[in-house]
Length: 281
Image (cartoon, rainbow, N blue to C red; front, top):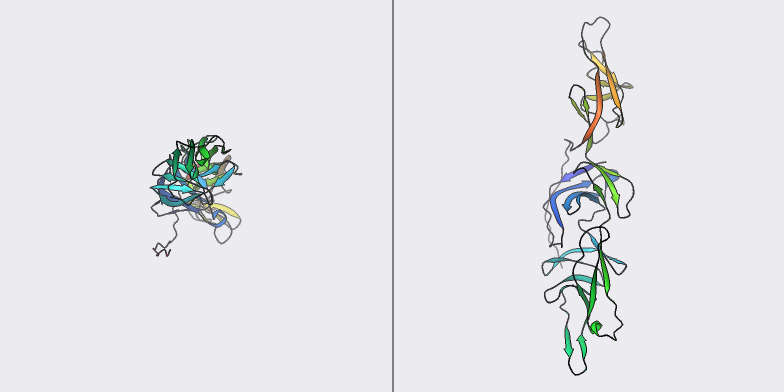
């Protein structure tokens, strides 16, 4: 899996119950369109270019819109869920930020004004939900307007072992994903970190381990002080690199056994360009 840590400062309106760190990894190559980051309360996650959860409103998905309405993010298109300075969290068919009207006529004993729903945001977590009750004209007993159920939806891959390593699918996603590059350790404590990209021969390098002439090597084949020959490091099991010398050499060396250790941040870098442009409205 190929990801680059991108220098950025995430700026978006307040999201209820949700916090995202500044460090974001963006996918490249086959992983283009994926981003990985640490957020609360989920931990280390990977998503399809979503920095925040969506909301399922009465069976329809409302995507987050990263603009501020009274200091908070809002969701939806056509039907909006946003924060009202008068009623708190509401669902409305009006434009985001519209302050709905609700009055009570004591003579007709009916509510007048707009149709909207109000409630509290659901707790974050798989299976959580909350009900938004009809307000305004929908509050009248003969309105026939039903409450709306709101559920958080955050399709993602999630890690249980920290930022680097395996990410397992959650909420409908499929297949595992990985962040970081695998690292092996020799029985002499030397570390062998896999390159992010393959070389011109179509093979990865692993620190001092490289492929040459149909052989995996540590050191230079034919060197007077010896070298090691083995196989490409494997995720499962141990690969032994056998010490080799020239026939006339008196060099002495030990075999090196290499086993997978963990996923880590690689050392390779790439140039990125940062800029600022005007937004015309």
